[in-house]
Length: 129
Image (cartoon, rainbow, N blue to C red; front, side):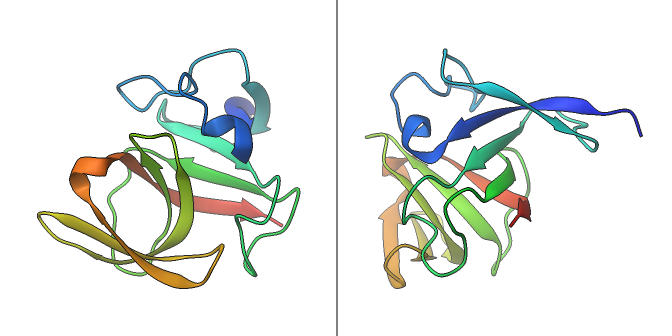
């Protein structure tokens, strides 16, 4: 497999207002390139853990490969991108017509956010730990 590259950003930088465009595509100067052999779509990006946001599941330096256009299912590990630029890592519990319920990895609590507060949700496809 020839190696392709996907955009890579640290968790803290990913919460910057200009890190993603309105189509959930990476943009701005904080992004680096990460060689990744299965980079087949333009909606895949890499997120590096830079603090405690991964809780007990992911540690400092782990790299998560996520897709902003993947279908979500209960039990998926996800990245929630909110309108106010907060980011959450968690496990999807339920998505209704109004809310997204997920267990947040940072504090191991159930969060329920109105969909009106969420820009987009990415599914974590792979993690390099």
